Image (cartoon, rainbow, N blue to C red):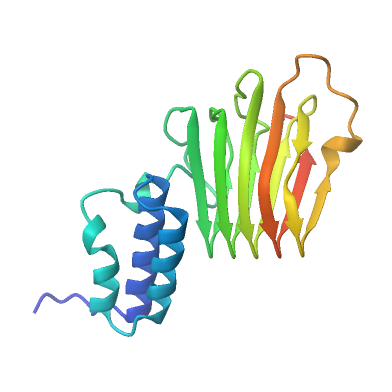
Length: 196
């Protein structure tokens, strides 16, 4: 006897979904494969079925490898790259504080509450693109004054509001955040907040 309490099917399912999300963030799985495996995780009736979903992925990512920060007291992520991902599946995810924004940031939000806060971030020169894939989610993008936000997100049965459109026109050469992608049964809010 090890003295450890047995792992419940719900705990094992949550851990499996965390691992699948981490592997997706590391480009080990496509979006379609991630969705397929998560669906199978919810259909699983025992831990062996869940183990089978990650058996071919065990050597790589762990949830700590996800390039996101979670909840209050979150940490700053790893150094900047040209392309990063933020993945939120049935969770609350916040990317905030002092961080280097990549030229391309993919945001995947599934039944999640996701905040991308750029007020203390270092923005790349030119255009930084945030490519959004949101399903039944709430996504908030917070920008400092003087940033131009080019909102090109396709909304399906959702709502979108952009406070940056009400701000004074940014000067020539100001940073540009281009929002692309889609939001289905989701809410997208762009808010302007000063760096305090």
